[in-house]
Image 1 (tube, one colour):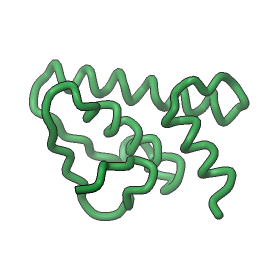
Image 2 (spheres, rainbow, N blue to C red; image 1 turned 135 degrees about the horizontal axis):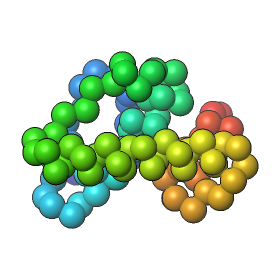
Image 3 (cartoon, rainbow, N blue to C red; image 1 turned 90 degrees about the horizontal axis):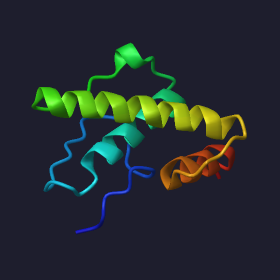
Image 4 (cartoon, rainbow, N blue to C red; image 1 turned 45 degrees about the vertical axis):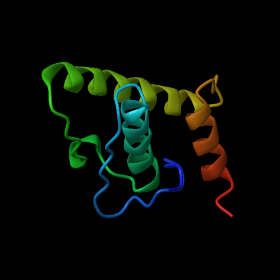
Length: 96
């Protein structure tokens, strides 16, 4: 089985992410969310993300907001400390 790559995975269809606690699911979902906004030009209101508890929902909303802010900062030439955002911006700037 190949490791999941949030940069290379297709953005069409349904993506189910199932993994043990602490494996980076929330990080990955936030990254896919940012890709949908940047690459598919979707509005936040057009994206459905489902999780199972109120606490998980709040954590996911916080992480998605943070990731969107990091992407904006990275695109504006700011600090791109997040490795995912750094890779994503490089991919967007050089789609070849």
